[in-house]
Length: 197
Length: 197
DNA sequence: GATAAACTACACCGTATAGTTTACTTTTGG
DNA sequence: CCAAAAGTAAACTATACGGTGTAGTTTATC
Figure 1 (cartoon, each protein chain N blue to C red):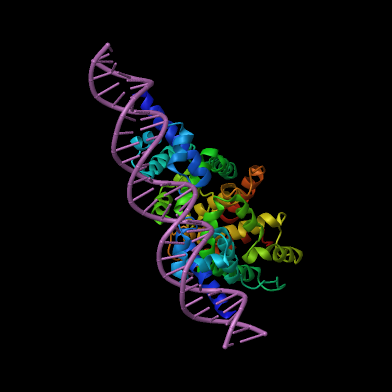
Figure 2 (tube, chains in turn blue, yellow, orange, purple; figure 1 turned 45 degrees about the vertical axis):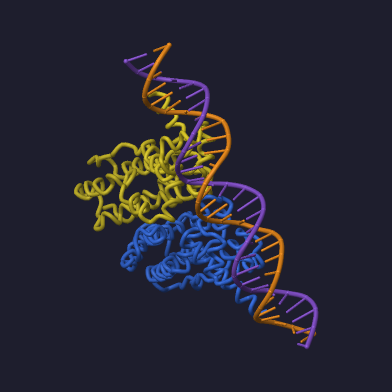
């Protein structure tokens, strides 16, 4: 079963490219078959409907995204340095071509399909997977003072998303050059509010 | 020429509803005509193409959005109170049904049309129209210390957008109940970083 | 009350799309 | 080596969409 898997991969890869470029609705199954260099019937042998192909493609794209390792709080080390490291790792995720591609196709679909939006929102990605645990450890260590952990997490991550991710997502900027500055300022903002001096 | 204007209004209104619900691509001209209770030919008598109708509808929706008045810096009055007022006014805009509707259709189109994204990004709305002027006045008054006015503006507004607007836009929450709390925390975060004590 | 403008219903055109069918060839595996 | 599985090209179905043409009716205006 080697050829079959190969063809399936070609189809999913073609769907990734076309869906992320033009959106799901604007991409026809004929286009996908052509791009995959596969007969249209083969596409339908692997995926019964366009929606099935979309789901399979979304799964494949998510699998490709490197979420980065989970960073644990290190007592004694500078909180500024640790937050900076987390922010930089998050920026790496948010600006990676793989993440941007999946985000573009997912966001497009989310605006017309609320159930997809809720599903994706539940599966937290990047540093949100572990950030509230990190913050709790810092609080326990007496380095930070935070009442609302969930809010503080959002305040930190949303900074990065707004300044870096959304402009890229909507093609407002082709690349973000001053990420070091933005990371530094985001950490400063966060620590000004929550650090114990 | 009263009837003609009436029909045109019905068409644009129907387009607003359908475009914001299902997106432009997923809405047919027949559906719009039916919803407007107008013959399809009348639609085309008013708007030569679907793109023309889209443009007219976008303009009409923008006109409906109440951007709120421009708030000037008031020396002597509490900066905390003033920022809170601005934030609350902004929340009013971001949660208004008119703004959400236009945002939903615009965002959807922005993801497939980068030129539209750039155009809309240029026309700053809400408090971004005057916020950097406000901040500069506060700096001159010796109340705030800000190096990068543009960044500070974004940091303030993006808080509100991320916490309130995006969840509504993507239908993650039907309504936001604790806006007072979110405003208070956003102002706290901002002042912790930039207030002169 | 006549005239021009605007609206209506409806058929129509060309194109595109999701998905199917068919008739035939290639790959795979026991 | 042969049968089953999976591939191919291409025609086909049914439907939908953007947009047009037409013939007749309603509405406003003089």
